[in-house]
Image 1 (spheres, each protein chain N blue to C red):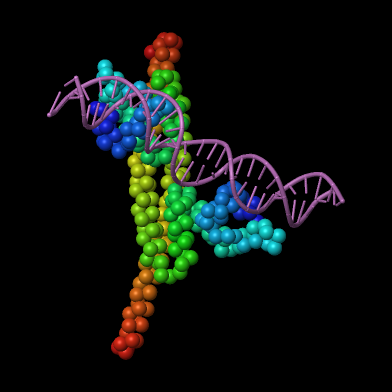
Image 2: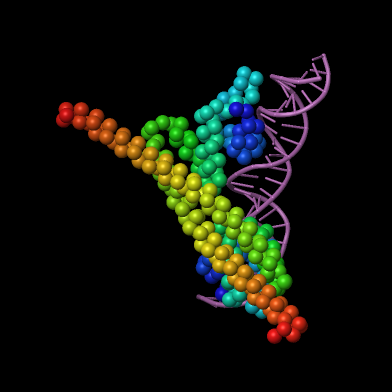
Length: 134
Length: 134
DNA sequence: GTATCACCAGGAGTCGACCCCAAGTCAAGG
DNA sequence: CCTTGACTTGGGGTCGACTCCTGGTGATAC
């Protein structure tokens, strides 16, 4: 799979894909002899995981650290678990905050809906008055 | 309430508070004659709302636009509602993505927990073998 | 074979959101 | 009165994460 397809598939610009590789977030992607990237299964899974984590806001630095540990084999399992747990908690915290904001937004939207209704009623009343319907 | 207290209370640096004011996210805060900021009730509510929205990731630009509409009175109620609804949807989408990521993290953490357990079992077995307990 | 196109490296530029700093002002304590 | 310390403005710096750009190479279409 070449870079443009990967870019398309994951909705990540190829610039970003190359950037991720440059900074070591993704390991060097396999290439054709010509030097052109040819993403294999492993590469794709890495990209997918990265995309998922990034979309939730996990910092690049943390991901690099994590992948570095993966590289070092089983002896780093504990450390990796701790990283993931920490990020999990941070994520949960962020989500809780967002939930609060969401509630407030809903509340405010509802308020506006009522306001609009009220205005409409007033307008109808005004119309009614104008038409002397009442 | 002076700036340091507001900063403390909301966990926002006073630099950031001044910055918000400079860019028009918060309207000019009331001052003492000496020129020192003295946050009133209205100011505080604005700060709180801003903090809440920002903590959920709503862009500053959107908030400025929103507050601008508020300033313009009732005729902008529809537009305001639309902004809030749009942001609400974006927020919900982000949260859904984060939930997916959270699930994956939990799954991975569980995997690591099992891995650790397995390793411990192996170690015990190795010990047992070493001690010829079996 | 040549024109066009996707790809390459990697350095520079951008963007959003702060954060810091210098130089000055004011209020209260000693 | 003078020092100390919190406040002021405004501009420049930083940080994370891209995004763009230049100049070059290889492959495919005509």
